[in-house]
Image (cartoon, rainbow, N blue to C red; front, side, top):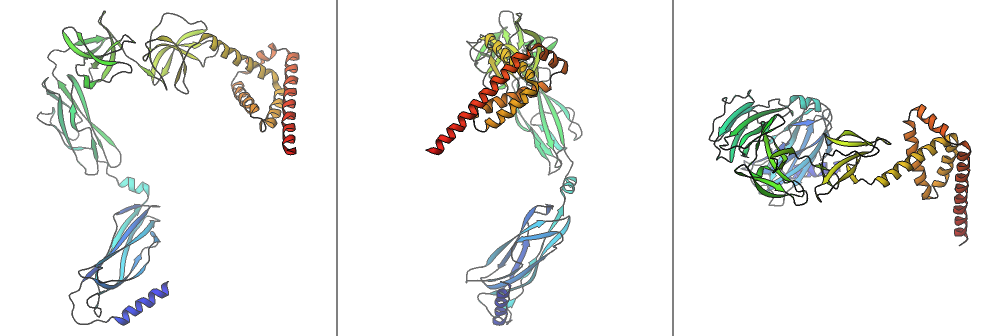
Length: 486
């Protein structure tokens, strides 16, 4: 390939010769869109051949610092020919950054011949490309840390205090007729990003607006604007020493599952709410002194409020309900679900089981539910079924303990047969699970349970189990022999 190129270039040189003055001109320029490259990354360099008139032929070579970058694709020597219409041609090179440093990609030995004057060989102008290679740590260290704002304002209103890039908390007051404002924010460094600005919906009372600036290096700074919308007729509520105001705009509220939007009068003021024929609940929004809105159940008869805390499982939504009733076999406690604590009942026989008394918001029915923490599932509690689970679980644990060393033999037999009969795979899985739970039991407890078992009965159970394994194994072997005959 190299020899062919040399022959072609030789023919071009022999055929073309420098003649009198010509108006033809051209250029061969190298460029890259990336100026800084991480070690190990690849990047492209573009070399563009161009002329002010159709090209007859051209040639050039490229050179680069091979200790910093490595050529992955592209020819270092190029010769091209025109067809009477080509005025430009582009070549792409792929490089890989191999170590920190600065590397130049240079255009070498450029020549051109115009289509209209094949006897005029001329040298085009050239430009080179360069990249800086850095490690990832070096790149991150060079990122800007500036996470400040150049300006912050609310259109039509004045901030208090006056804006300063180092001051992060501001207040502004607006009339009760104002439903939205526009926040303008400009970053101090062009590489930083800002979020939280723009058009903001307001509700009566306190509204907190957070404008967050993210510097190029990822560091954050939050500017907070507290907008006080003067409520001329606020409905103030005191709950356990905390002050709230009733939210009067539906747009600011999230509709609970199974409820529909409605309105209700609190005092003489009509406010938005959510109701359900199934749950018989009326839910309203309350805003605290920090401007945060939460949903509360409102009792029209007593004019009292209670926090609406909906638990969402994988396939059900529940509303915990307080109950004075106790559950036989369970003790009262609390459990944390989705980072919130709820009243619950813990099984006295197996402390891994919890019950929660709650209302199904989809049906309005109240009942006890078993909570599966691992899979975030709720299952309706059935006392008889639950007792059966506990009984089987305990009996199997005791059986496994009593087997002791003999159970290891049985376990090995099961392993042999398991490859031939999927039925035994389930047994092995069950035994493995029980063995793991046994390791976690205290030695004294295990010894007590062993002493309670009758050795004769255990040995009889082992023999029966071994006979079953032998019979199943023999049946499988006979079945295989019959298949071979057929």
